[in-house]
Image (cartoon, rainbow, N blue to C red; front, side, top):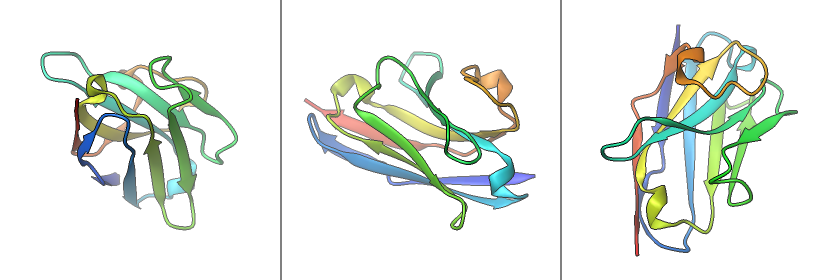
Length: 124
């Protein structure tokens, strides 16, 4: 089992920045690739970004490419999502997730473990 806890959500004005973190406990963190997803009100959960177990590979949704940066620190069992130039349409609950699958796994069905989510609200 892997337990995931997201932190760092909040309210920010459009154009601002936030950094989300996701702390993992349980099985060896470095054995998992990590992803971020988000779910806006009334919408399905969607892929945001993914990082491989060693940080060598990163994948982004087109809607966040250039603005968001995913990173990880295996010594701290933590994955981060730096969000810059935020837009109102970035408002959502953000979830981190863990998977043993390599590659650009963008489907939530491909992730084994999930955090409880953290709310990000971007005001216009």
